[in-house]
Image (cartoon, rainbow, N blue to C red):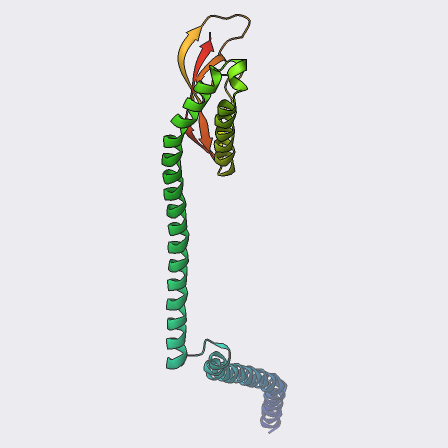
Length: 214
């Protein structure tokens, strides 16, 4: 009988030990379940926030994005752009026309000046051969006044003679028709002018005909 009682006591002790172990493990399981539940709740909240942002994105684009233009506004912009382009084209045409007109005027003026220059040359040749007594003659004085008046008129429209004698030869302004050895004059220096050259504004009408020292 004692052996049976001892076995029953041992069984009760084993059961108490297992119950204690289960009781000890229960808090750990509860804590694990609580942590998993919290993680699930956070994941659910994050998913809800993402969905809410996705739903608000079109609204934001509608508020801050580019608004679709009204048909009338679009037509106004197109017409305005067309008018501005036409005005720019007209302005370019006006400038081009003025430039061409100025070029044609300059060409025409140079052509007229070229025809007048031989008359100036004849005045200079005639006055150059007059003696001192002849220069005192009223007729000669009148011719010289006409010559001076023509020079003044040409100068007023932008015509001026090209400087030659004593200047270094420049093919842009001078036309060398004779060369001479002259150590005193220096090399490539104009020593004599046979025919005056003239400029109209910034362009050459006629080159000076000169003699150049070598």
